[in-house]
Length: 454
Image (cartoon, rainbow, N blue to C red):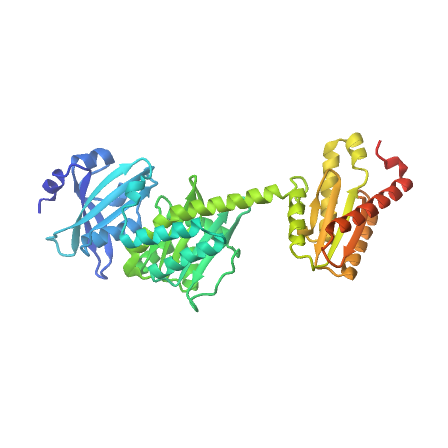
């Protein structure tokens, strides 16, 4: 059959792929049988007829599956994917062709490069995929509980893929950890991981090396497993250990970096094309929404955290007081603390020494109280607020703090404490703690007049 004349009639870059079928009925060697002038001009001088495709572009098991489906199974295939090896996006169509060679199928491969992702091309998906993606966007946009909304999206993915589990794994390279952000698992399928479980960071990082220049990784049979065992034996062994027989995994990217991964395991491999299409499109929205969510979380932490000591700041204390007023029947203990001698240290040794003293003060407080109970509210001022604590426990903690201060040669606090049975009159509770702190400070400076502020 004269395939060359066939490709020459196509105005866009076009080639004919010859796909061998193995005796097991799987995809064998793929060759670029012939190509038109536009294809040759695009691919460059390294092209020659009947060449193995992997000599021209990096080997990709996902692309091989598409070729097999078109050439051997007779399915028309279309995809718009990021081709990272070439720094472009590729709109590609594979059309089955008649074959006169036993054991070999043929397909026409037509493509067009775009420099960046184009919304119109990306939106060219099946009606079912469109409906699920639109539903996901609406769910995420109206989220009160963001993580639960993401879970609702994963529920739909689980059903659409006929999968046993669907997860989003995030990678934090600054902390060198991988965290299970959200998952949905069919009952009895696997041992569930708790949200925020920390996973093997090194193993998760190796995923990116395996996925490489592709935009996805698909494992659907033993041939794919054999390939993974060559590329990443540890990952393959981990999946076999957990009885994972099939996988589609898509990186979640933001500003060119991998934020994490969206994947389904033990899915209906007969739906692999639809599952890949759905996950690829969802990955854009999920990557963007999760990135924004994490950014807002970081900004919230920054706005409520003292940059020097890492303790809660005045904003956090105001929020805590609003929470206390919303539950007026709970008991509360307040300690008003003032760091003795800070101004003298700043004046005589410099502000760096003063900062070190403040950090030491924060560390001492952490040893006695929970992090969320401690607030640095000013230069040398600290507040401890403990809700729902008995008088006896509060007094014990106050004694522990005074004992720790007495043993410490660098950190000295003026301490005023007050316990109240309810939070009904917080202002009065704070006022009493404040008065006792000033009385304690006066007593300290009477004993150590040389440290009094000048």
